[in-house]
Image 1: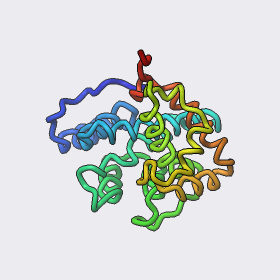
Image 2 (image 1 turned 90 degrees about the vertical axis):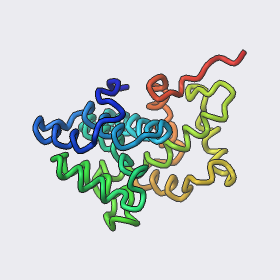
Image 3 (image 1 turned 135 degrees about the vertical axis):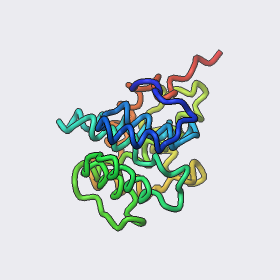
Length: 213
């Protein structure tokens, strides 16, 4: 899903900021570059890709702007690794400086209300909040499968693991449940929808796995 990196890992992020200003780049390729420039770890990049996948899936279903929703998912944590104490405020300020769409920035603000005070009210804000924790949890469930393939993960497997407090303990179960309620879906249906999106994008998410010998 999406293009390969177009920027070298050692590029100065400030140079990318200036380039974005000059070319007014706010497409998926620019979002991917911005994520990579600020997020060295593969694990956090994969998380952002997972949220992007779920957001794009919902945007298609709801007839919303797929690129806007996908970029919100891709960029929601782009500043977390290098600016954890300032997340997401540091990232929001940079995105505004670059001229990214305000609905995208507000969605990022609403996914971390405890820090920003912004509650999710619009559709993009509600769905970003709903997809964030759940997509990461689905990835965790995938990793414990022998094949490491998200295509073999079932809704019942996810719901069972959600009831196991010791599994992926860092995932906030209340946020997962509240997210489903926020978008007006039973938790099982929300899991099914996110699973379908991530299964569709399994290769690009690095979750296609390999056959068990």
